[in-house]
Length: 136
Image (cartoon, rainbow, N blue to C red; front, top):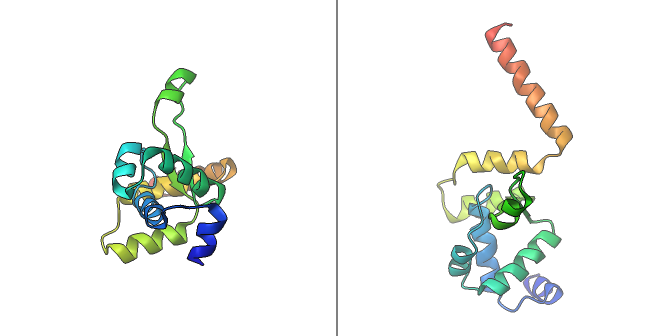
């Protein structure tokens, strides 16, 4: 299967690609520092950007740009990385290290993945729980 993925996506450095996936699995919900990712994966920045495009195209990870009222700021600020394949993320993070990454980022990844309708449902659910707890 490794050779199938390598050939299909035209990946030159499979170890670097795997290191990139591992690094992103630990950084879901965080800002992307391309220099740091390049150092961790052992890939140059041009290759990192190419492989990120592959990861987005295969719905494994997604870059989400920050939101500002000024589009100039949106362009200049670093995006965050979110993972669609939570099974892969959990597999990588639990098998490489028994200590889980920041749970807040995992929750942010969850919220970042769900649709607007899902966000409305989640907020409604939380508000109802708070109302019941405080009995108002």
